[in-house]
Length: 304
Image (cartoon, rainbow, N blue to C red; front, side, top):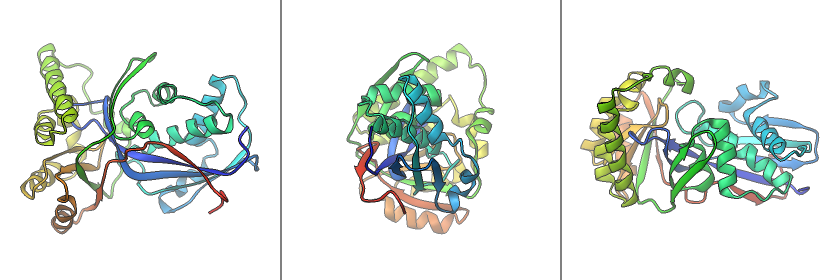
């Protein structure tokens, strides 16, 4: 079993990209980092104001995923000390739960020397998250288009993505359960066919790095944005202004309430500066695609 200290870095992600609902995801260069001291007294400490609430929960999502992985291979997880930090917020539509799940799977993978493939990690992560759009880009990096039916996962991975992004983050949080509660149980067959066609064109445009066409498809989504947009403050206004300033377009990031804007090369910083003045209700960050996915590094000390 692994005995030396190490660190796990898991990227944030934005999911759906409009009509790619529960399937399409893109890794972002913001990270959940877990510093691990193997065979130390079992303890998880979350650092930073954003994560303080998790210190009250000994059965946190990272450890749940680690135990699930160990049990899946009929192994026992050894004790370890974890120190957790994050450069992106929770419950804002940036894949915080997915990153915790991926970190826990990687924790078990390293401690137990399971040598899991990305495909195996994807199946474990999807079975815990129940949909693959956030967890799989966190594993692979880049853009992923995935299918999961409860038994198998199929993924197309696009490692190189030619786009810059702006994340608009409001003060309020929106939990996935609440956001999903606004979705309909059924769509009429004709609407489902239309929505599927829109999603198909979105994916084809993404594969060609045609972000202008992709943004057009985002505006036509029928699966979730028409129902979730009510939870996202000033969504239509912010998106319209971002496009006016030079962005390709925007979509709700994951289940919200953050908004992700897609921009041409070297445009994001300037647009971010202008949007920050126009929409003080939001905190804006320029972000870029992460191309590596989850990464494990040796470290001299797991302590912060």
